[in-house]
Structures are given as C-alpha cells and as structure tokens.
Length: 108
Length: 220
Image 1: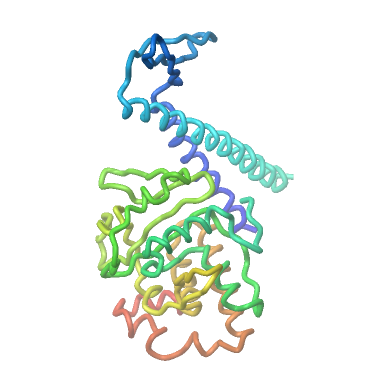
Image 2: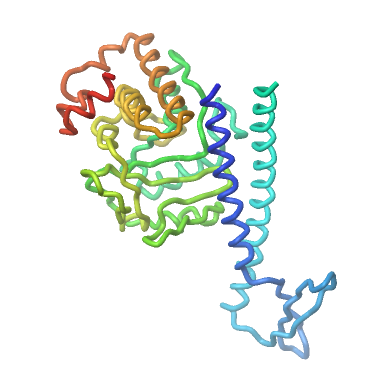
C-alpha cells in the first residue's frame, strides 16, 4: 500500500512541477491574436488583445511573413499549453484528493 | 494515470515510434518502471507484472553512446507538446503532462554527478550509479512493429533489489523491492530462475567491478 501512496505522491510532485513550468511558458508567449485586414489592396495586421474585459485591436501594419508565422505559432502553442494547464490542474485535484482521503482513513 | 494495462497510451507509443523512425531507439535501453509493461509482452502472458508506475519514461544511453545519426530529440517531439526541462547545463528531460522522458547514463566512479552531454541527441543525460549493470545484457521486445531494447529481466530484478536498499524514500524503496521480487517470482514461475544465478554476466561483482559493497547490498 505504501508503494501506491508513494507513486501518487511522486505523481503529485510531478504534476505540480509541470503545472508551474507550463504556466510559466504560457505567460512568456506573446499575447493576442493577429488579424489581417485587406485595405485598398494591401494586407495590414492588427493584434487583437483582451484588455479589461474588452477586445482591443492594436495596429501592427504590414508584417513580414516570419513575424506573422511567429504569432501563429504562439497562438498554436498557447492553445496547447492552456490544454496542458487544464489537464495538470485536473491531475493535481485528483491526486490531492486521493492522498488526503488516505490520510483521513488512516487517522480514523 | 489513464492508461489501461492492455496498451500503453498513444503518446507513449508515438514517442517510441518517432525514436524508432529516427533510428535512435535501437541504441537506447528502456529502463524504469515502464519496462514491466514490455516484460509482460516478453513473457507472453506466462506471468503478470504489476502495472504500478509513474509517468516517467527513462531511457538509458549506453557508454560510449553509439548513435548512427544526429537527432534533436527535443525538436522531434516538440509538436507533441514536450517541453525541455532546461537546467544550467542544458536539457536533461522532456516533459508532457502525461509523460516525462528522462535520459540516464551509467555513472563512472563516485562524484561523477554532473550531467553528460549526448550531442547526437541534443540532450544531457543524468549519470546514476549501477546503470551499466542494466545495459550489460539486454533483450529486444518487438511491440507493434518496433523493437524496444530492455535490460535482461534478471538484471532488472537484481538492480531493483539493490537500489531499493539505497533509496532515502521508504515508498520508493518499497516500490523497487516489490518490482524486483515480482520479477524474480515471474522468472521462477516461467522456469527461468537459473537466469538469476548464471555465473558471470549476472554477477555484478565479477562483471562490473563495483567491488564487494555492490553485491553485499544485495545480500543484506
């Protein structure tokens, strides 16, 4: 039984460490979503950001393909990391509950 | 945590598949508790080992590393959501919410505690004691069209029993001991008990010059 508890405790430690790591990565990614608008035949970019509950568009002008790709990649990663954060929070909740439950039973 | 014993999770298989396609899997030895799943395959249902394991997937890099190609493992697995765990000296593991991949290497002598660069993989491996005992004799298990190299079950079992005595955490020591005992039991059930005592290659004292303390730890 101790080994099961040990595995759960180790996994809780892992989940907490990974959660911290992913949240850090998420915070480091450039924020916002790039929106392209065609104006008089030219493509101009705006960065859509949520600020104080409102979506605001910041003019970025004409951007190089590499810059556009950087924002697209960040958007993709943000989605992926947000999913990871959510999964890790679920794991932490489950593991904490499992370990506390065992402690409670032992105390009883 | 979600996987069933009948199959490893898709992510684990995808990692193995990519390492295999990149031509590096054959040079790595899978160690750690994931081995028990593949030993169950190796025993073909003749014995059933416990599915108790963490999400760590440990790969042992043999000394000297013999990779035929240079593969950036971090890049290879990046799109699956793996992130490198960067320390001052470089990447020592790759982590995903469901799987943590660690690279290990046998420690040579006491104090060889810093990580070892594996340029062919673009990572650094963590040296640990007695791992050369695991890579000294290996078996290959074919699983879903790729070959996975594992320590010989007898070596794995003896190694687990030895390291269980060195663990500072009681729970980890208990898990190692249980895995070792379970595997020894399985070998005897399968009529392969003699493999545990075959003279030279399984005797850690003779084959690896770890000195008497290594073997004594097992005997105590």
